[in-house]
Image (cartoon, helix red, strand yellow):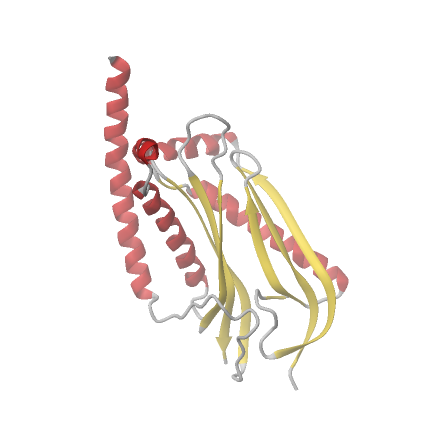
Length: 107
Length: 149
């Protein structure tokens, strides 16, 4: 599956479009990691466990979007956007959306 | 009296740790930015960017970072808030986070020639209602990496 966040796939032509596909996920870390992040908060710096959490959430949201596009028979998702929001303390929501299309190599 | 002493100790300690961590992080960021100086990254191209060259690979690359300030920075910003103006202690924290996220994105696109349409998304994740907290900022940078044949 080809993913781009521009409005085309360079080097290929779009032959069919299937509409908007989305994927979202809300994830949290365990209480011990939350406590560790709380301590890290005092001394400052990057919160590695939350970065990991965000990365996992992004992967899952994109995977869900891809799956939806795959079911429709698409082989690419163009104009992908990622959005995040804070649901509650220690949890991350990532929302991915894009347009599912079918692409073919030029010429 | 004891409370004030404890506060001073915490402030002194977090000032010490915070400034060491920040200095190291900035040095690290600078070194990596110099290493990547020849890799172009542009934030336009959603509609207009095109090329006649043959394209080998095209993919979505992302970089994430969650960064927080320390107790001392928070305390100083709280005082500064009374008078208004620039909160320089928070500026450096957010700046570090953004640059780190962008660097991670660019490092994932090692073999690529270009990153087009780079976007940066950020959200504060410190909503503990009413309690005094240190700001935590989650940043996602993403773009399309293009590799020529």
